[in-house]
Amino acid sequence: MKASATHIRISPRKVRMVVDTVRGKSVSQALSILGFTRKKAAVPVQKLLKSAVANAVENGGINDVETLVIDRIMVDEGPTLKRYMPRARGRATPIRKRTSHIRIILRERETRQSLA
Image (cartoon, rainbow, N blue to C red):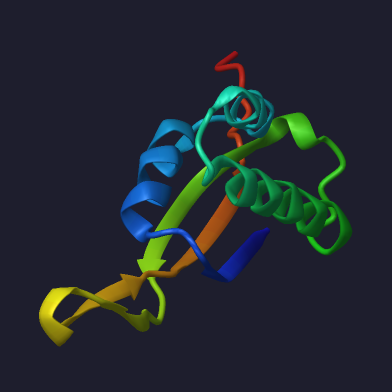
């Protein structure tokens, strides 16, 4: 019940802003939040969440998707593409195009047992 996306061409700082809004939420609630989030990073996170749900159904044997909750979602820094921009007087300034690795782990919500 996990999925990962690597080499996403958005800086990890920007992806973490989106990821922090859905951490610990149920899958249906997280998908609705991501659907209305107006950030570029919401698209790959939403795609990754749907992939993790599909993995849970196919490989984990989960029948009810409504019981799934985001257990852990992490954003790590990937390789940085280094480019240079020409500047005045023959100089050059570096441009760092950062990438992200996103990992998500889902778990089933605990069902409440009666104490009787």
